Length: 157
Ligand code: HEC
Image (cartoon, rainbow, N blue to C red):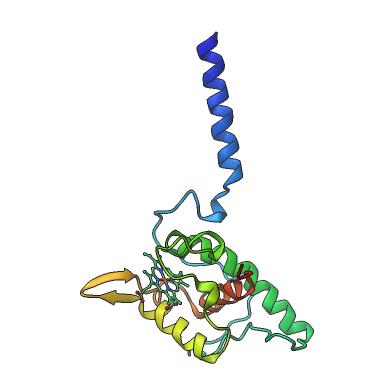
């Protein structure tokens, strides 16, 4: 009886911890392969990579309805895309645990975009070792910019 009870408690505990960390937070699949991101809700941006984040609404700027809608869709898509593909190295919800740079601090401007795009498309290798894999063939640019938009909306403290 005693054993049964503690087994039951253990199961309850397991169920609770699973519920506390749903898969979308990236916690429970820290070692999954990189995967394509469902970009439903985002208008196609075309084949050619843009040089600046098309979903950004610069601070203090008024956005029209369409832009606001695309921005919100981008944050939604980027939240999932980030947790599926980036969180295992760059940290849950954009907060780095020290394994890889904290991406919330990348400037939300054209220079930051160039840096971001280079990293996400080509990855980073050093001394023949892959520090970050390239995502060029995994993410389309809608997904890449959506992840960037999500990171820009994460508070920095
Ligand atoms: C396997 C671990 C790993 C994964 C997965 C990963 N990265 Fe990285 N990333 C790194 C490391 C390590 C660096 C630092 C490389 C260096 O030393 O310059 C980095 C650097 C970067 C940089 C440059 C940051 C800076 O401040 O210089 C960006 C931008 C970036 N990653 C974006 C992403 C995005 C977006 C994703 C998901 C689509 C992602 N990374 C997935 C490991 C990873």
